[in-house]
Image (cartoon, rainbow over all chains, first blue to last red):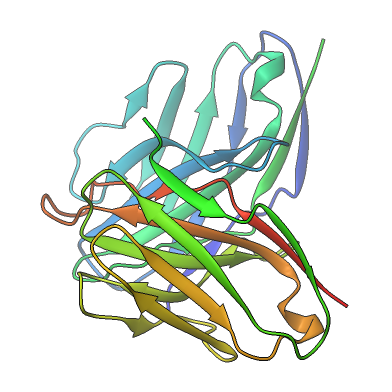
Length: 114
Length: 115
């Protein structure tokens, strides 16, 4: 079974600064997709960004970007210009081709300080 | 635009009671999922339904049953609740029509406590 590792249980970041959330994954598949979700304190899961294993460029979506290093099997999320509303738990997840499920990491809690 | 709707939002049960969690989506998605979220463990898949009429076990199916009632609705049943099933339950849906990049869309979750 594939494994997703998020080594940072919690992080603090100053407002307007950038923060990088680490995610490494373990799969022998060549074709897979990587997702990041945000879970604010209200509890809902919000899709942020997607990176395909064959994508040549790193994904970007507004203030979110993904630092994808396929050889190292890492897909780190970068949040630029942090805002107070970015305080949340962030989950990295992976889906393999021909599978339906997402496999999730344990999550990283980000707290943005004013 | 409701997306994925879960009911109830909160529930407290006694050990041994049964309960059905309801989920409905209005996005015309083919696939639906049930996850549970426990502290420090992320989300784990309980059951999924790739398409109407099919259901399959996920990582942690023991103690649960599911029904894909139609394309919109996917319910999760606890036949005899146990304290170990205290968790937050999420329903999700997705379309598989265009491959890996389609994200799963989640409901707001059901917080279930079993005493």
